[in-house]
Image 1 (cartoon, rainbow, N blue to C red):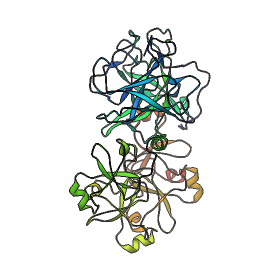
Image 2: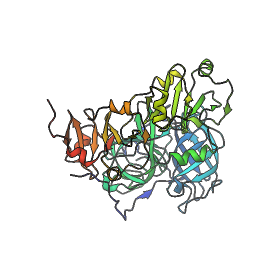
Image 3: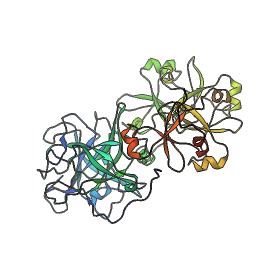
Image 4: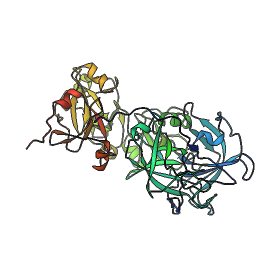
Length: 478
């Protein structure tokens, strides 16, 4: 059975979940949600649009993506959309306050909206930055069927028109057929009868990871089963993807270039050097000096570093004091053993960006899955499960969906990389058949539900040439 993503269904009567302020709006305890505890999910925002009680006033939810910016749904500000500039009606954002009756967090006027040109998404600028509240990072991996996301918002509940407290619940991403390039369906998971109600529009749907939450989508439309004032019994909702909007968000908020090798400081005190577009922070003034930089820097707005990539881009050449020179590939550091090796791989004329030794020591030595690399002789491979998988000819690269971007690595390094992915690596061919690598063999999954039930819903999935997968045995080696 193949698992290829296809088009979406049409003609559904889902409702945008913005709420009138005279009868506002997430899933409540009766509707299946859970009241958020004070101090949790502080990046969630409530937007009050217009004067409460007046005709046309609404409320929505959102997520803080920078100290002075909230991301939410464009349609919260009118069904006909909105232009760049001041909001059409007075708007305030409350951030960092699970209970609206407390004084925690920040309440700020919104003075500017920047709508996305092709999606129901808008960035709202706060006059007063939400200092002391950590913004949520945008996710770097696309959503996939069976993954679990947490949704939060200030919308209606089963029993309250205008709740005082944020509510939250877990939802599962729906089947491929119900996904488009920009949206996907979700269904309630815990509690099983949770609903996304009016007032939850623009609220965050995010992964909960050990490294912190990652914003995948915002609430778009919902059937609203169980929400007060609604008679619909069908459950589920549609989320609007934002995981692929990092460049747009970054370009809107950080409207000036940050140069590699330059040192910058945020008002809160964090000092970083930029390497391959990523901020590499210093843990002390002494570390700045030890790395060879003067104790001077350029000021940038609070939250700037959180909007930048977490690791340097592919092909960035870096070095640390007394540490050697490396090129970054798929989040890993690949060492050059001589100046000639740098020249052979095409990096001879590139001066490395100096970064702290402490930082470089945390880097892995093997690129992440899906990284496409090349040796100086022109051979091309993709990494999967710590192994390199060879492309036999250019068309094979195209057939597997990889573009022309690749990182040139030393032949010496590639010669020492395994050709067989480690056990537990999830891979698929261009036709959509998905396999698990076990003992050098491929184990075929008969359905995506089988993948989810096996605990691989969140595992990296790397596309490999059909030729390579056909050559793998179906039984593990002894």
